[in-house]
Image (cartoon, rainbow, N blue to C red; front, side, top):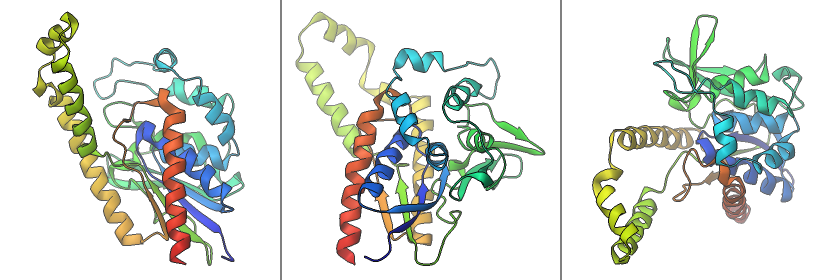
Length: 288
């Protein structure tokens, strides 16, 4: 191949978006050069940190995240429309990734959010990098929405979970999308069934008590149904966008073991990103 310039697009997906780090590392290890980047939600965060030249520092910081640190970074709120203010996590990242104007970044960058009032997509190509990231990661019901001018901004994944149409393109570049918006629900269900079978065979008093306290139908409660419904809608939007924009290389990462809040599993999730991207690169290069 003569040209390995990449326009990279990173999807939403919460902690699963840490796989974007592995995807970027794998692309670079194969000689691909990322000329521009766009992202949504966690993809906007990883993309912004990369564009600022601080991806390695971010990865090292993620290694320090455990359940205790996650709790320390969670600034709970008493508001009726969100659980977490979201200032503490941004301030922690800004300690090693200083805020910059998006237009001053070494490569073109775009973050996508959703205006709740107007019901439309909003994208940032200039202004404060961290203001754009904070708006893009505003997970509904969880993070406090960002008020900006006349807008109330929430997670971009609500409308455009993999913004392939928002990345800046150059002649002859390769459009690469990394999509971590999907769950492998079938694999998750099979894992749960194996755990239940193991639990039934366990004759200990602890297992017996857990079996009584945690009935089979507990997996389907108000939270899990709402969460899965939202995930399925986001996934369908991402599938439609990839069909519309037809990226040259699509890294489709559906996870069965890790969810949107598994930030303490960063290295394992990054490893999945690398392995899945290696397969996608091999498939793309063979097609040439």
